[in-house]
Image (cartoon, rainbow over all chains, first blue to last red; front, side):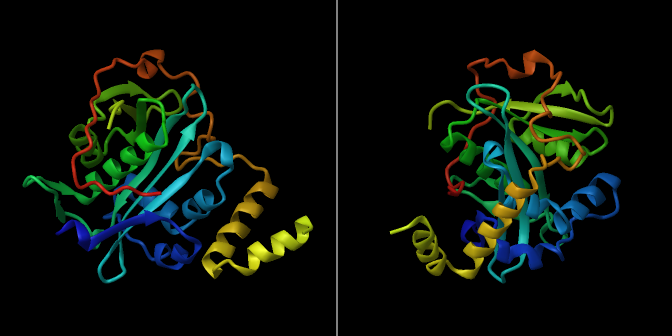
Length: 174
Length: 73
């Protein structure tokens, strides 16, 4: 897949009908949870994000107009500057396994493309260098994605034994 | 120009999508409720009791952003 075959942009209210049909689960409980949230309350939560959390939801749309990948992040206002938390990254079933060709012969998955786009946005917004995700500890696919993008520092999640936090450090210069 | 007149002008220049976004923002602000993440933890509380070491900047980035990654406003 060429980079121009997927267009990543901010979510708009007009995207809600397309997300109501979004499918990313093959039946694993952690995939079901994400699919239910994307088809249900998650997009509205981000459209109505209180300013102090600066919630941002991104979608990647294919040439045919279908939503191929979704990502959402907001700030956890704990430190100065604010820490960026990537709450969701999900690839549609139809696009799972597709690779995007980057310059210099590098290929990355759509999930990787979305996470790196979010990290680039965090960088441009001046977020704290440390950034994190929460992952179901049984979700090997997402843990492998974390490894590929540099979210390699694992910590227990204080709220749930089912989850781990994966942390990484953003570059401090472009 | 009064505030009301100015708002009317702004609204009249919006697309339907922009107007829907504004309505969602107003609804969220009026509801006043703190959102929760997909695991049920309130936004703003996710880092409560987190290992302080997780937040320590090492100065050695683990993330690199390759050429070709799009910029989104």
